[in-house]
Length: 142
Ligand SMILES: Cc1cc2nc3c(=O)[nH]c(=O)nc-3n(C[C@H](O)[C@H](O)[C@H](O)COP(=O)(O)O)c2cc1C
Image (tube, rainbow, N blue to C red; front, side, top):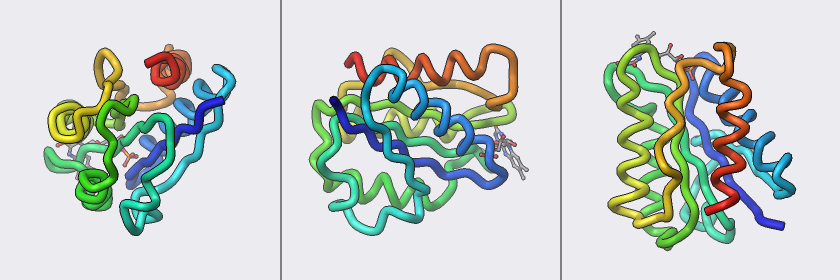
């Protein structure tokens, strides 16, 4: 059974709901999922020891929430190379945060990434529950 860490940065709760659905998908696939808010990660040691990771932030003003930036700086030192990874985040129109998190995980951390980031505007949209759960399942198959 794999252990997966999902970290989210959310202002009004949408990204957190998406994170919870990804965790459900991981659990449906028979694995453990730990959910944390970005500000609960204090050092790179908090990131070590998992079989896979999903990092998510909502987009505000074309950018990710600052706690997720701090998480990514810590992740740089957490030796995540070749670990399964995914990125997600609620957005309105541009989803810059989701794409930048995905790119950093792929190009800087050199993680084994899902086929694409989870581009979901909100958890309540039609099909969103299945899409987010399937994303969690995909992470466990990498
Ligand atoms: C002040 C403000 C700025 C925003 N800027 C962007 C943006 O640049 N690009 C985008 O795609 N969405 C933008 N949004 C939309 C949010 O990403 C969207 O409301 C999202 O659902 C918030 O997720 P959260 O509940 O996890 O915080 C903005 C929203 C607000 C209120």
